[in-house]
Each structure stands twice: as structure tokens, then as C-alpha cells.
Length: 124
Image 1 (cartoon, rainbow, N blue to C red):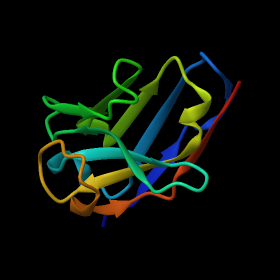
Image 2 (image 1 turned 90 degrees about the vertical axis):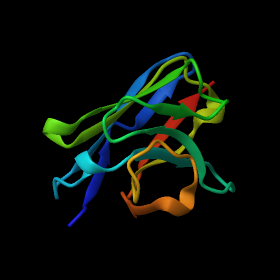
Image 3 (image 1 turned 60 degrees about the vertical axis):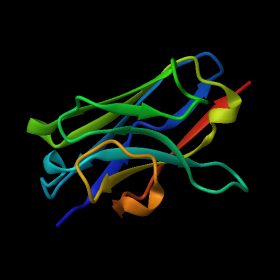
Image 4 (image 1 turned 30 degrees about the vertical axis):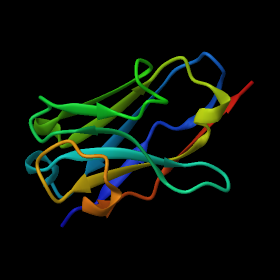
């Protein structure tokens, strides 16, 4: 059973960095693509980054490209999101999700397991 738990969120000043972690207690994520999404106040949940099952392919939203890096450690059943040069617009609840396929995709509908989210707040 897939159970995703995010951690690493918090309050940071603009320009700062945070590293989000996603742990799967069920040990199933190594065979699937993984993604990070976020939902800001009054906004719809949006794609942030995705990584293929092997880590060999990644995809990023234009708004975070060059600032965020997604990575994974299949041996530890972990996925990470390194966030640098944070901006107030990055403020949101960040969700980790497991895809139903092996590639890196930005389409929400193919993700079938979601964590509870971790809050990231960037102050100006």
C-alpha cells in the first residue's frame, strides 16, 4: 500500500532555500514516476516537477525551472525537491504524488496516490 508523507516545509525569507522530502512507507515508489504539485491560497493545484522511475528523466514547470531540482533515492523509497531562490509566489502547500506510469509527466490525472502536503511559506 502506498502511503506518502511529505516533510521539510516551513517559513523562509525570499531568496532562501528549502528541501522537501517524500517518504513512501509502502516501499512501492521505485517502480513509478513521481511528482511534486502545489496549491497556493485560492488557486488550483498545479504541477511543479516530475521524475521518471529511474531518475533519468525530469520535467519542471516554467515557473520553477532553474530554481528547483527533483531527485529520488529508490533504495530508500524517497523523493526530494530542492528549492532555491524562493519567491513569495512559491508559497503553497506542496504535495508529493505517485504516478500510475513510469515516466515523468505533468498531468495530474495520471497520479493516483497523494500525500497530505507540507506548507511552504516564503516571506518578502
